[in-house]
Length: 110
Image (cartoon, rainbow, N blue to C red; front, top):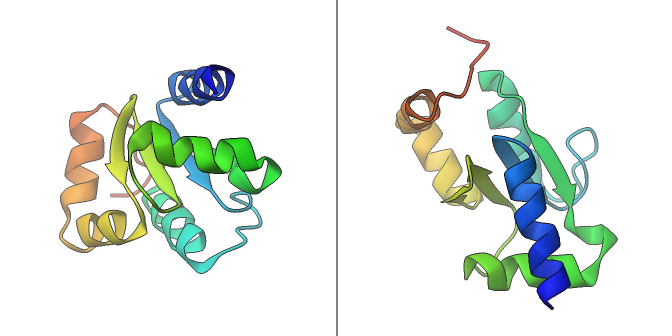
């Protein structure tokens, strides 16, 4: 399992914003993953998507890594932010934009 944790950590460390999701950013394969992709895309956030459907080890490993039971999972600068409900709520309240700005993440919308 340590190799899965090493892989997950390297993915999280590889880019400022990483989304562990079902499917890809171009072709999300669940509604919750799709919602987070839409929010990040709306804000103009550059992010890396990791398709957990490609490996059951990664799919189960990310849940253990974050101690969070659901997918998608959003990480910003190595910090676990949350799943779809948390990201959507933060977006609706204007908190996600502020959080990303505080972390130095460039947004392409005003």
